[in-house]
Length: 242
Picture (cartoon, rainbow, N blue to C red):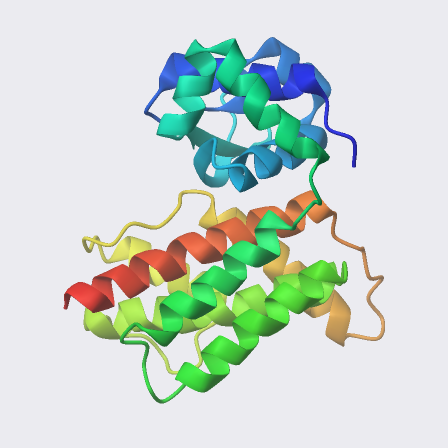
């Protein structure tokens, strides 16, 4: 896609106002008017360039679900110096790469060196690889469904680690609710219940012949991937420190 300089500049400018905290794109009237889809695509590109980090789904203060972000040190430097920013923007002419699928593949490498449960480690890694492949090929229903599988793996680890009683084949929404009700010291993204609904809807429509299958948007798919990555990364970090 063609990236617009004014959108990139507004994302960096807004992020500088909140640096180093999380930025809500809906706080900008400019980004609010542009809309979630194009803003998400530009945040993805800036993340690939190393100028923003910690991209994750949030509920915008002015409505809707957005991808929140914070500026990296490099991003904040760009906000202070237009010359440095222009040097980074010149990289847009280079051969594009997919930051989203690459970030999933990075998660694979992290999982290989972590204390991921050996009972399902191979399946876990293989599923992450399938997520990257499906996303690259714009198979968004499959991508979202596989993210649901990974989330169930990770959330069940949280349940077991904290000795939470739950039935063996609990669904994704039930796992999330049980963990939140238990008041344990485990962070879960506040948007995760809504993300789980997107996952469940995609799963159900894909397996029932009488369901009309709505094709998820790329932006919905990205939000699910970001939420999945956040849970997995936190879980891996927790396991490593255990």
